[in-house]
Length: 276
Ligand SMILES: [Zn+2]
Image (tube, rainbow, N blue to C red; front, side, top):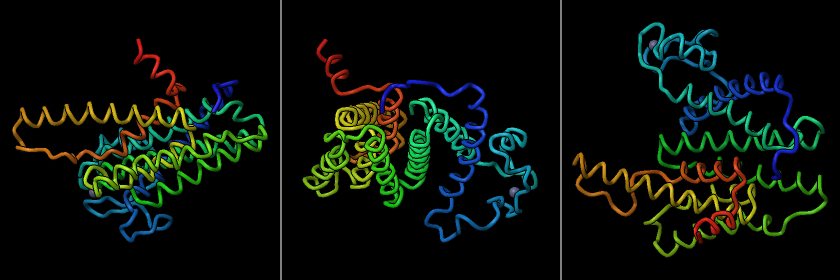
């Protein structure tokens, strides 16, 4: 992905953000209903506490949450912060896609790339929220994201007539990295779910940027894990935190991806900083 060649007109961001908010409220439904046997397409949203079906004015992204001060209008039960956070994240994802895909609204192929990037970011929102809730990443989400990233490679081929060979192997290369540690530790250090998530990261970013995203996610993940362990020791809530901590790694992979995606950092940039 090249650096932004042309920003969309500022007015265009109003529909982009509105569309993102609406997409976000759908993502909330997916996160909550996935693997529960409930239909994602059918069934009205209802309060989890009193079961009353929600009216249209209780389903307005972000606004309903603020107006109702984060509580159900009937029974007063607290509404999860997940709802507004996912909705705002999805709006930000659509805006970021519009900024990072060059000339996103000037020709059909660029627009298709914008749609694919926005969809990829939406899957990452679902993956982060689901991993935080359930400490697992459903294969479907990771494979769908990988498929979208391959679609982005296809778009680049359609627009430029060639494919970066390193990018073509990047998804599998990052996956094999995780697979290697999964294999030698017999699954004790990490699950394979993170490796499946890395497929889409590699194919979306290419090899150099993909490795950078991986490095950043390990560093940030290690820093947060150490801080969490120190905090737990101080508060003496749990005596021992094992090698495989309770902190899911998926969100750190997405954070690493986002830093690289938004600022275009590659491995060379990271290595040159380390050398200084
Ligand atoms: Zn209620």
